[in-house]
Image 1 (tube, helix red, strand yellow):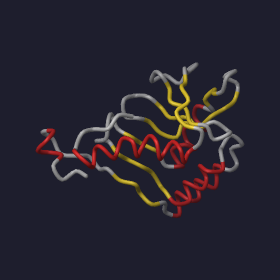
Image 2 (cartoon, helix red, strand yellow; image 1 turned 90 degrees about the vertical axis):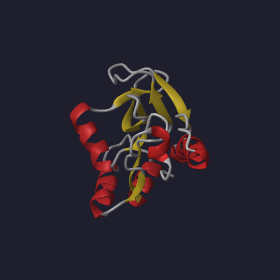
Image 3 (cartoon, rainbow, N blue to C red; image 1 turned 180 degrees about the vertical axis):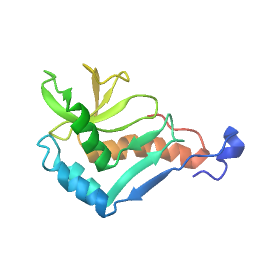
Length: 153
């Protein structure tokens, strides 16, 4: 994926990886089950995947480790999501351009319109985590791998 990156872009690629979960990641993922806002597929994801880091695809693409999701929740609480902005969601990652991805309690994935999480404006980007990973990540990675062009997130 990054073989021609430096020649094409003039700087070396960052670390682009899907890191497998270790015991600490799995334990943090299980701790998420104690947070009533978490969707089951997110816990399943963290049982296998520790984090996703793709700084060179589009603006970047990041799915944070479960421990970071928990820490952010403990420090800042839930993010208001849903039509009435009363349901609590968890920030699970970002696009590298300052926008955050938030998963609601039903599993719906949202992206913030601005970098602020105070009274955020959100757009739904996927019905669930699987759709999010397939549509957002795959749509961005495929052109990047094929021709070195950064995908669009």
